[in-house]
Image (cartoon, rainbow, N blue to C red; front, side):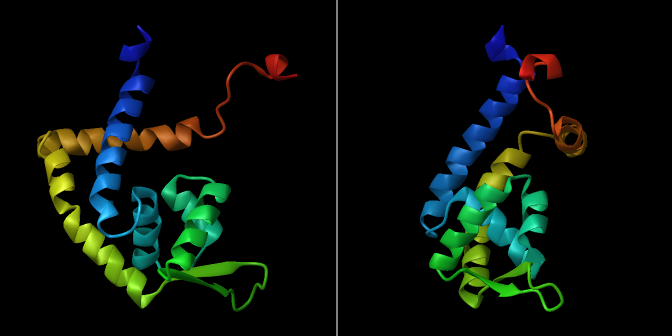
Length: 149
């Protein structure tokens, strides 16, 4: 049955957590997706948009829109790359760093709740299994090349 497929179980787990995270971060004035990008920026300031896309497992259009919103809220800023004028480096602002820390602190309970569902051994196994998916599925499309033509 479709509802019991691995894809639907992954979707259900992700969307459930995402909805709860959005609710949690609402008090901080950011979304779950903005929190992900802001956390990446706090951990690795000065990344290019392409590097952020890779780390967030997202796409350029989505990350570009998130960065635009973060800039509008004065939580992130872009600076041209010192040696390649075509590349923009992205940094959290001081306010962005403070907001990320607050959101991280306020979401600790949600992360604890998720972690308590599994033993340490199960968490390690689940993490390893889930980490296989992005590299293996990148570029996957429905159908065969003949059907796409």
